[in-house]
Image (tube, rainbow, N blue to C red; front, side, top):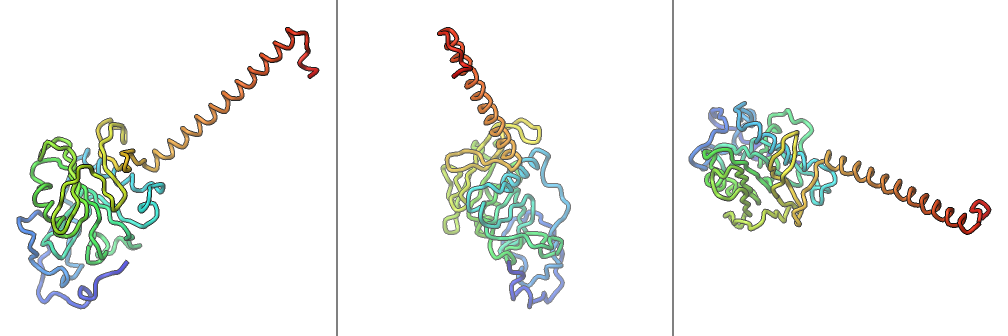
Amino acid sequence: MSHLSPVMEQVRPTQTVAKTSPRTRKSTKPEYDWRKLDIEDVITEDDTPVDGILADKQHRFLVQILNNPHLPPPLGQEPFVACTNVGLFSMHLSQPLVPDVFLSLNVKLPHDIFAKRHRAYFIDIYGKPPEVVVEVVSNRKGGEDSKKLREYALIGVRYYVIYDPEKHLSKQVLRSYELQGRTYVPLSFPWLAQVNLGLTLWQGVYEGREGTWLRWCDYSRQILLTDAEQERLAKEQERLAKEQEQLAREQEHLAKERLAAKLRELGVDPETL
């Protein structure tokens, strides 16, 4: 992974740049050139609470599934970064975006994640935008289907997904888009072909909470399992295999007992055979 571009390394700001926090602005026109900004002057965290407990669980659930090493390619073969509520910085925006969940393929987290330049996702440093962004709607003020939709298109995020469980913004609970040119086009089914992943709604229990959850799936809408779920499934399959093996032994024993009884009825001692 490359570090700062030569432009960012060589050019320093000619005047003091005020520190800013990632608050929503009405315009996406940059107020200063990110390429001329010293990374040490950037506020990557502002400690502002962004979501409730339920949303936090949903965000982590999506990322947790991606940590399963048995995922289909390309995720099972290539390095990737998946994060929740991490600043996404671009020279095309005056303020960073903070996606609920994003997925970026073919990139690696640096070893020193405490360094300032590594504490957020700087597109100029990683060399590409994420392929996928998922926003979970919790109110009508986030601009997920207006301002954010335009901004994610502007910085080149290939797939944008809006999950609106309480239908704050639309009658549709789940909406997905693919970037074509500079515009998002709605997808009839949230299948994200470039990353070989889909999204579906699943009724079940996560972290002790029964409910409807947004989950990754394959093209046939079969859910992808977390590493813990994969282990539980493997143990259950092992248990069933042992039960079947035990049942087969018992059936074989009963068959031998029946045969022995039949031989005795015919006056034949089965022990002599």
